[in-house]
Amino acid sequence: MNSSDSFTILLAVTISCLFFLIYSSKKKLCGLPPGPTPLPFIGNMLQVDMKELIKSLRELSKTYGPIYTFHLGSRPCVVLSGYQVLKEALIDKAEEFSGRGDFPAVQMWSKGNGIVYGTGECWRQLRRFAITTFKNFGMGKRSIEDRIKEEAQFLMEEFRKTQGKPFDPTFFLSCAGSNIISTLIFGSRFEYTDKKFLMLMDLINSNWKLMSSTWGQLLFTFPEIMKYIPGPHRQIYKNYLKLAEFVGERLEINRQTLDPNNARDFVDCFLIKIQKEKNNPNSYFNEDTMSKTTVNLFFAGTETVSSTLKYGLRILLRHPEVEEQLHKEIDQVIGVNRSPCMEDRQKMPYMDAVIHEIQRFADIVPMGVPHTVTRDIEFHGYSLPKDLNIIPLLCTSQFDPTQFKNPNSFDPNHFLDGNGRFKKNDAFMAFSAGKRVCLGEGLAIMELFIFLSTILQNFKLKPLMDPKEIDITPESTGLGSIPRPYQLCLLSR
Image 1 (cartoon, rainbow, N blue to C red):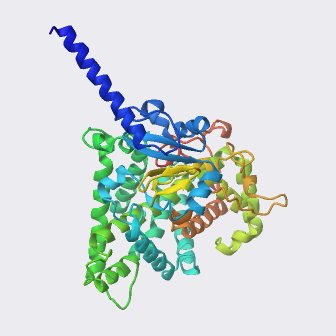
Image 2: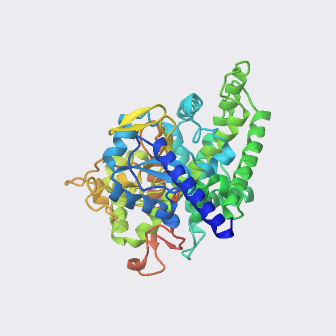
Image 3: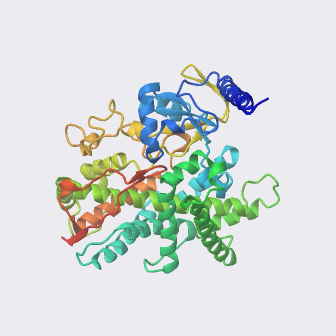
């Protein structure tokens, strides 16, 4: 047999193997919604732009409809888009779609443990425990409102130190948001000059950007390959280890000073719960779960609010007419002699509408975190097997043209009726929906209202360029929509 014959046979065998793999894959996926034809190993990744994965998935929905199958490497996922389908899945069939899907960037560290990336009975018990504990410590009540108002004044002090000169607000906003969740979790706040605290803010900001970068998307798609390939994505795991190390130090401080009859914060309550269930071999409350849950809450409570505020200030720089109207409403309802409070919210429909529109337009978490199906189900005529990964494109509800008049434009009128009163919109899914809706939604709304109202009560925003030239599209979009870096000046009012 000559070399030409050997090559022909090898080529034939290779092609046959590829066809077999494709046939096996199709047979295995029988019953799933149609979608682009995947290739072995790489799935549909040649059909999307890895720098704009969310945008690519939205474009594919125009071809394949609001429900289609997409392969992240070798993993089949069903993509859901548009308000109606997302509502039917996440709300009408909330239990069936409540599983937590693959998110390798975090799960390499969390191992599926913790309140955000856990699933099943463990997740249910942790969520119930966290909601109850936070309520007991004032979440949604006047006690935590007073704490937010106090933190807002600390933030104003830092802003005044800029003396009207250009600065980047990122770390100030991160510190303010982080101090609120820190109060609930650890029972105390940090000074804005605390070096360890600033290092933590840097770790959280860094991971948020890395998970939303092209490297982060590649890790999301090819986790088994990317964990061996050098690149900035490998820093995500290292950063989580550093966050966990800090949390471990705080946990030890609480452990050494714990009074079982006088819980001071979330960590104390968790330690007491561990002690109560120490003889239960099936308990989900243990040291590892406490560490993972605390990091989850600290990260989420810091980044989402601060990113929304950062994006919001940039949007207002682009729309000075909106800022001007907000100043008028603040002057009329609050004045200058007292701090904003949540009672003011009912009298400030424009501020409420602007905050909701900032959240909708900024679209900080465009696809939420992947879900899974908790049992075999029929959905829209398709057979979805248990543990199938689901990608809910929350952004397609936030930008659904059937629900919002000008979805691609920043327009507070999306949340105002004809009489200028605030109106809700069920397509607003900034906090996700259903069983996995953000447990800190009430806290986040309170922070956004008090922080933004206080900033605009005290300062006028000054851009460093013509407002019309300010780009309010995100710098990158992955796990999160990352606002473009910018500086601004704050002029005292």
